[in-house]
Structure formats: structure tokens, C-alpha cells
Length: 481
Ligand code: AMP
Image (cartoon, rainbow, N blue to C red; front, top):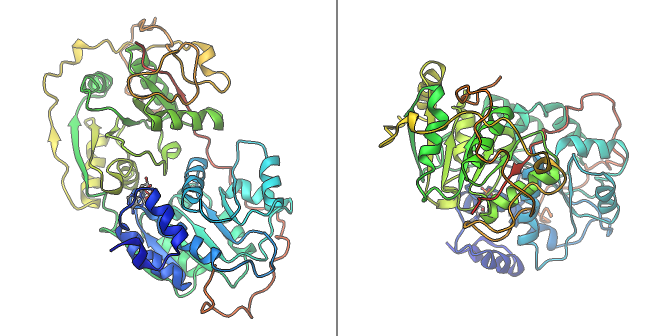
């Protein structure tokens, strides 16, 4: 089915064509007509299925088909997402699909100054993409006016619950006009999510793709059974395969992520990290460099990597096996996106990992093949921890080193200075490497507007703001010549 058959306006289908999409994905085929009709929608879809366009495209159609009720430029669509990375990514999507429309777009998220965000809101942003914490901050200060709001989207609602944003979500939704369209997207349909849909949505239509909780079907999954002490050596061994050209490695902790990255960098594998000890700009630079192919490996923690959209990830490696099956599903959803083929490799140590693996296999209703790494000899690798960082690598806006582009691409996420923390020198301790374990655009046929109270200035309450969304981060370097 072509996009034009879905009822989207020509300026939107043009932008979609320019994005290179030839036909809608299954979630788009199902969700777009429902959103265009003005229905509330529960979308059950993992990231990687094209769910962002599934809600953004019809929202753009609805918004552009009429002006704001008040005639003023003010917030008409609010999209709330759990992490800053996801907000930035959704914004990129909105801008791409809205490039032939005249709609003002703004983002609201923590870790950066408020003033530009306040200015964008004052300037008449019509589509706002926000994380819950900063949004509530700005609501409390009276900068967010919802009087003309037509549609609200809660993206990755399951993750927002996991991250403790339930009170924030409630406060935000209560501040919205009652007469609105609400869309809620979630990778899984848990009891808690179903409860929330009863609270936030009215007579919703449910659209679902794939089997509930099943990882993207285009991903080849397998596991290596490996002792914890040999995991780093196994990673180094696997990375000898040059077809692994864009590899997302998951570590359970930021400390573990740093250890892995230091070691890879020391062995000339261009590596960045994405976790919560770095500034927002460093995190975005790490992602940009990974997307551009300037770094080959991105080592991330779950929360930091949530929802990141990088086309062409060749492999996801669960260096630390996730204890929660849902995290596994989210992690491997990073590869095999939108029908691409990718490999998801998990390192599984004896003990807890095995128990968690079996729980996962029950959860996804399928076994995951075990593989033996050919020619792998852990003793052939120096896994002594690299202990030191070159401090300049950590400073400022310049997380990537090297003066010359790597073979993986040309556009650095931030250019410059030296990259290698300790020039491959084994750390002083001589200890074996650790495993990295922890320490409406509503159409006129929409619901009547009579019952719609004016939200006015949002209620200010001191209660219930969760800790602001975690601060993923970045560090990285280019591959050395
Ligand atoms: P999402 O699930 O929204 O994170 O989207 C995953 C990826 O699929 C993004 O890189 C989108 O640009 C891409 N995408 C979205 N819709 C389509 C489509 N109809 N055809 C091909 N790729 C798409």
C-alpha cells in the first residue's frame, strides 16, 4: 500500500518520499488512519517498527489542515518521551516530516539551559517534544499554556513507568484540556499500562504489531556461554570481524561501560560511550559520531540507549545479560530496525545469567541458539584493565579524539584532540579484566468541544516530580590509524 492511500496530505507524503520510505510499515498502516479519524490510540509496538512516523505523520496532517482554535500560535501537540535522546530523535523526525509545512517545533528536556526552551515556547511553538521532568519545571513556572492543545502523545509509556515518571505523567495529563486526542505508545501491554490507558485515554483503538513482547523478527539472536573473566577477551575476539562495523554494546553499569571502552580504545577500536556521567552535549556528540560511522563501537547502559535510533547498527552485543526480559527486547530492537537485518549477540555467564536467559526464552516463546566462538582463546588477549583516562578526553564539547577521520566515516561528532586514554598500556594492577558487572488536529468529526475546560495556567504543585530523567553521556575516540 502506498503512503498516499492513507489519506495524508501531499506535503507530508512528499516529505515521506524524500525520507526514502516507499511504503508504510505495519504499525503505520494501522495507526495512521485511526489517528487521522481523531481516535485515541494505544499503539503496541517496539521501537524500530516505524512507530514515530505512525503518530507524527497523522498529527502533522491534522494540525496543518486547520489553524489553532484561538488563532494564536501556541502548543497544539505535545509529545512526551522518557529520555532526552528520544526527545531529540523524535524532534528530528518531526522536522523531517514537517519540512514542507509551517509549524513551529520545540524541545524541552533537562541537562541544558532553560532559557532557549522558554523562548521557543514564548515564540509560539506548536509542537513540543518533552521529557517529563523539565516539562513540569516549566509548567510550574507558568511557561506552558495548554489552552489550544489538541493532541498529546505518551511515547514509550512502559519505559516512563519503569523510570518512575507515573506521578509526572499524571500531572501533565491532568493539566491538559479534557477534550483532546491522546495517543499512547508502549513496547509491551502490561497490566499497569492497561490501567493507565483507562485513566488517560477515551474509547481508545488498540493497534498492535508483532507478537506481544517479541523482539523484532529480522534480528538473528544467539548467545555465547562464557565465564565472566573471559567476556572482554571474547568481545575483542569478535571485533576482529570487520563486518561488525557498527556495534552497540550494552553494559549493565556506566562503570562497566567505561572499562570496556577504555580497553577497546587502547586496542585501537574506535569507541564511544553513552551513559549518565556526561553532559548532554557530549552524549549527543557520541550518538552523532556513532550515527556518522566515526566510531565503530558505542558502549551504552540501558537507560541511556533507550529509544536511540541509529540506522545500520550491524550488531547489538549484550556484554552483560539483562536481568529483565523487557530490557533484552528493547536492546535488540536497536538492530534490525525497519526491516534491516542485524545480529543480537548475548554473553551469558554461568549462574544468574543462565536463569535470566531461560526466563527470557519463556518470555519470547522461543529458544535462542548457543554458539561457540571459533578459534577463541581467551589467553590470546590482554584484558588487563586500562585504568587511566587522558583528562582532556573528558573535557568540554570535544569527546572524540584523533585528527584524521576513521575508516568508518568522515563526520566526527566533535573533533579533536588525542583519543587514546593510555596508549594501549596495560593498567598497573595486573588484575584480570572485570566483567563490567556492577559494582488536530482533531478532525471536525472529533469529539465535541463543549465539555472542554480551559486549562489555563497549569496547576502548581510542589509534589510528585520524579528525579529528572537520567543523564546518559558519552565519551569516545576515533579509531587510530
Ligand atoms: P522508529 O520505530 O520510529 O524508531 O523508527 C525506526 C526507523 O525506521 C527510523 O530510522 C525511521 O526513519 C525508519 N522508518 C520509519 N518509517 C519507515 C518506512 N515506512 N519505511 C522505511 N523506514 C522507515
